[in-house]
Image (cartoon, rainbow, N blue to C red; front, side):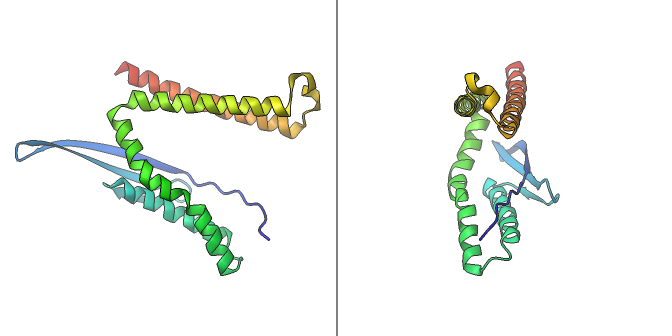
Length: 170
């Protein structure tokens, strides 16, 4: 039986755009660098699929480490489940990046809508767990969780607001 394990993996992606002329034609090339924050490993890329592969490999390593004491069949099943999201991301990721590059304001607006939806969902969860009339009956754990979620959302909204303000200035 596998005990509950929480693991975090953070990645930082930087893009660099080069616009140049070749044989009289204007050319553009995007290059990037992805860093696994926890161990500092980096990979440079000009194809975003290479960045996705880097992330997938790092996450596979984490899953393998977390399940190394499990039988190989169970370990393989867990790894398959862990990496199933990458099939979608590999298909959707490059499109999202292209759309963000073409119209950053639209993408930020979309992200703001998603955050607002999350706030609505969390608000519903808060109401279900700790209705105003029954607030004193909520456990300390519930209150801490709610406070952490609110702080996290406030931070994300602050970051997005700053990004949108910077885009509006340009």
